Length: 458
Image (cartoon, rainbow, N blue to C red; front, side):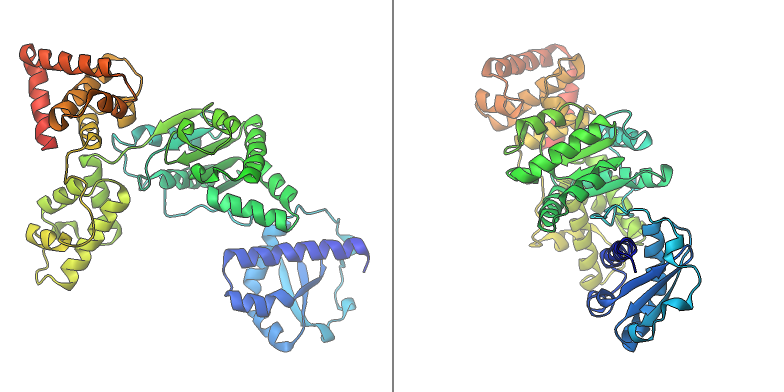
């Protein structure tokens, strides 16, 4: 066997085994014991010949021929290929007709990444849209509809558990369905750092970078964890620049806006800020209720077993994020199954379920965060808009009301209220409070609105 042929077969088989291992279709102990010690000894347009050390190896690999054939087709970009397994001592090269020498040997790019990382269960169809996330949803959908043409990079920020990862996977699933030829990759920044370290250790970093350069859509989650990882900074910087230059789609999430991430290089922050940045906030009541109803349907539970006030109670008291809502629902379902004698979930059952449950209600005390969220929900804004720099009349009016109510309910110093509202100075806060206090006496509609908001806060 000439060297070119041997290298080609070895490359093909190593990639095939890596694909089988990474997809997890074979138990790890089976893979290590049997698949690891196999070889691809010949190949033509329609068939592959594989050798193994013993008869037991042959039996195990022969049982997995469907998995092997699928992996080979993926590596070789073929529609169909059949494999046959031989014990090494029994294999005779002359028993087949079309040897590899008649096939054009093309160099195969080593694959460092063997999966796109996308979760099939998270799509736009099961993402609940509300005031708190509608901007992020619209931007994500636009990026999925026309990758690289609208907003790149798209930077989505918000606290943990608000649905950022769901949106990333939704983009990936939409692109896979509607742009089948596109190369997509989802990763967290923690996994990205690990992948960089492993690639450097295996002397495959250039292969890793080249594979990333070929992407059409890069989805990277929790970028804040890249902070302080200097080598990963450098690698990501080059990948980002290459994809941006090629007008490919990049979507990034974080728990804070780009300018507030400590430990990232300024050049990265500058590039993150060059596209579209959108925020996500805690779900308002209506969205929380819709999420609860969807979670109930997903668990194949009949929604009619719940009293309406029970769902309203959960949506009102456990709406810090989607995970807290789901945890509260799971706690209630567990309690009602294990300890309730009724098939119906009433309010007394809910109160008992959450007593000493360890699930913390988000409305036990009035805080600036609570006031900002309630005012934002009332006026159909996000908290980011409320505390931002916009001076449009509708947003400014809502901001002044939130400032006034923060002062009224919490009696905080003006400078501390200013810090809560985008680091505004104390004179701005005083003016806002005076403006609303004077307007209440002459504007009955404003007075009525503030009264409604106060009832929601209490």
